[in-house]
Amino acid sequence: MPTVSLVSSTAPLTADVIVIGTVATPDGVALAAGAEAVDKSLGSVLGGALAAVEASGRHDEVIKIPTLGRGPVPLIVATGLGKGQPDVLEPESVRRAVGAALRGLSSAKRVAIAIGQDSDPDLIAAISDGALLGGYRFTTYKSKPTPPALRRIDIAASNPADAAAKAGLRRSKIITTAVNNTRDLVNTPANDLNPVSFAAYAKQNGEQAGLTVEVLDERALKRGGFGGILAVGAGSATPPRLVRLSYRPARARATVALVGKGITFDTGGLDLKHAMMGQMKSDMGGAAAVIESIIAAAKLRLPIEVTATVPMAENAVSGSSYRPSDVLRMRDGRTVEVDNTDAEGRLILADAMLRACEDAPGYLIETSTLTGGQLVALGTQTSGAMGSDAFRDRVVAAGNASGESLWAMPLPDHLRASLDSPVADLVNLPKDRWASMLVAGVFLREFVADGVEWVHLDIAGPSFANSASGYTHKGGTGVIVRTIVASLTELAS
Ligand code: BES
Ligand code: MN
Ligand code: ZN
Image (cartoon, rainbow, N blue to C red; front, side, top):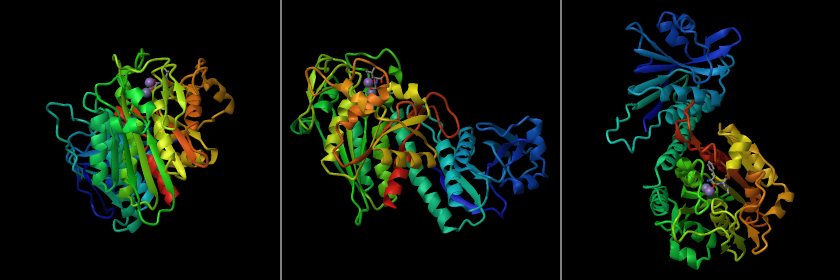
């Protein structure tokens, strides 16, 4: 990770590149606040240069302006903040704009950012978030990787010694590290990331962050009666795992359970997939997000107790695969008929949520790449949130404020009857396929203990991007880490 620091906005900036903002105003493109000193040092030519190249100031417009030996640095990058006013800087617009700028640079070693230039901690954090998320690269599988050039990011601020601004920067570094690690995990293909190697990653990185980590192997899962996790993992050459990470600070203000779906690859099982299988290395995006979020909570020293319960399995095809019509006995003794082996996520999650609730947490946050229905209903960028009404709404509000996009969805009681089975207590998929995102949520609700406030976040679309924009790269997005950390932060305050 490059170093990020605050530098004084009154001294001239030294860098390979200076990033400034542009805004789309009703009268055309304008320089955003913070660019004044840079513009002046160039003889106030930037407005004319932007007009000459027909700049608009819209999101994802990144214009590179060489200074031809006449300026303080060789290159100015003008990045669009979207519609607005030059001196009203909305954090998510700033995050996106700075992200797009940094994503578009490959050889700059030192980048200075002159946007806003005050010391508002939210603005400083947004600039830092955008730079660290946009500067992300995934080169693990290149035989000749170009080493990341970016070493240093300077953010111009009116008071670089401001304590709140420095705290905002520290928080940004912790959270963006969690997001980028989640991206790395999602981007790692399933020939390297399997339940065993994923569990080893969680143990090593969890313990390094001071967490207590317990890994249940297939024998422990059998002893513990985790019939859902064992069945889904049965077809794979790599056996399933259940990882438990816990963070227990002194004087905790709340107890929170996290659960995340860790399917390292989803072929669909014997109900083999016929669409989107190529994206299914990302079916552990929920697990990665909760592991990285609890690590971030520990680094932030949040005064809440957090335990992450993370089921990991590969949904594979072989002679030992579980079958449609199999009846599984779950952790609490209840039975589930398998109608479709591709509805595997809810089976491993049910066991994990039962285990999580045995600790009697006050809150349960579960997240998963659970249904194609999420994409149908809300698209590639907005996660669906279901659960206890009040807690669901708090998580949606905290997540949206953090810059992620979530929308509250209902869990209608009338959908419950469709999950009745003629042979078992429940079936994993009803005959009719409408509202499949909600039906999955209604299924999961069966496994939440009374009195636990809970939320289910379906991130099927948002966890993986097929095109880049703003601070988002192609591939794993790291989505839902910021929402979880924001929710934990709120519960801790
Ligand atoms: N992992 C998938 C959901 C998914 C789909 C995630 C697309 C990301 C992108 C889940 O296990 C699944 O297969 N869901 C199916 C179930 C159905 C076919 C039985 C679905 O919702 O389409
Ligand atoms: Mn599936
Ligand atoms: Zn799946």
